[in-house]
Image (cartoon, rainbow, N blue to C red; front, side):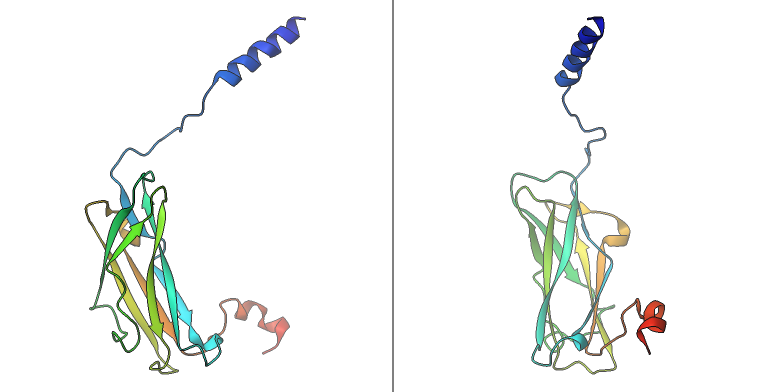
Length: 166
């Protein structure tokens, strides 16, 4: 009987507890790219594919808001090797994080027809501070998007080529 009373008392205590986050973030809202680099090859696609749009991930540090928020980007022309309008279209310099969300995307359209088969081109974008966000981690404040028209070996090829054949 005592055991049952103890179990009921402990159950009541546990049921009465509410979840509270251990370390809630209380700082400013920050924004980052999800990665510092991306690589895309047209070489694995049919020749009929002449353009594609890459979606580059953006994430926030902090809590989602009940309204849409704006982040800002800029092209880093000093580190970009691709030519505007020939190899890529200029992305929108302003993106949005939807209401209640903690991530968004930047769309970058790249073109295949002017790419030489032996070259890799790069577009570098930098995150900028704005009204809704300050800059997040230093290592994810810019993203380098590299693309080519060649067909490259997959990264795993050296490890498995012995069994798959040269």
